[in-house]
Image (cartoon, rainbow, N blue to C red):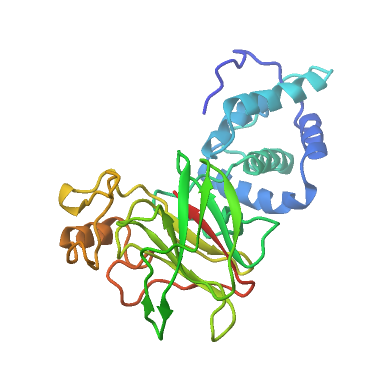
Length: 324
């Protein structure tokens, strides 16, 4: 970043005055840490021959997240607060023996770091921090469901016909309930503790399945995962709602750029990735398997069954599901 409105010949002020103003605004406990960091920066960056704040600030451009306007505002604030003009103090280039100089720069460094915003994760890499999990305070046993698509969607909850040891009788025609959410909306969906099944967009396949049970027979907790074995009509994630927070799934749009051979349209004409497992509509789509392994991968969703997909669990019988 660069200043676009900085004066050509700025009036300069003593380091001590500016440093005092900065110290009044920043968190003192961080100073030792940032001073050490600054020393590392100084070892690789020769200082300009000046203690002028306007000359120091451009060095903050090595850090992300601090805009030109915010730096300029910071500089002007302390320049205008200083009433006494003093000549600029010069130092030979590379002189790092002035501890005051280091303290000032370290506090500017602290300011920049405090304003850094967390960037979104790369496409397809879901955030696994608690802050990324969409939960609601009014929740009990069930699902905290969020629609992060760009349009209103109706989601259907299917309870399995029967459940066995690692197997289940999938229910394709009798949903337990449905929920319609506007784009960006969320809602807690209460479910019985006996629920073992899935939630999906609409009632038809191909569709992405978020598979879960509210209360497992062994540990009494909720467990879930993402599956694209019966197709994929969009991204989804599933997360625990208590510490230690865990999240899995994928967030990238895999349908738009999918090869034609991997596509199977839903009854309403919507594009979707074909089943990788097969069903009454046909056998496993090998192109879909190849494509989904490339853009999603078995660690994030079940593509061909087997193992390798993390189990997301919550002992409070509540999971958070986000549909994209």
